[in-house]
Length: 56
Image (cartoon, rainbow, N blue to C red; front, side):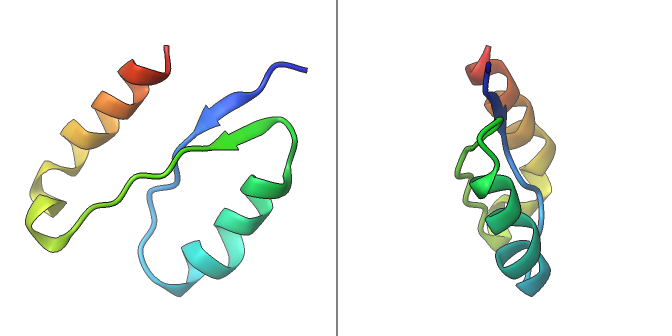
């Protein structure tokens, strides 16, 4: 099975407790870490676009 590089755009408890663990456990997905601080929040789309480009 081919794996899909996946980034989770979420903040707070729901991303950490619910979404990330299920994505990480599924063998069809490879969860890619992306860390964004408050200063980078404005540039979030650029960070996401860079992650997508780097996964190709």
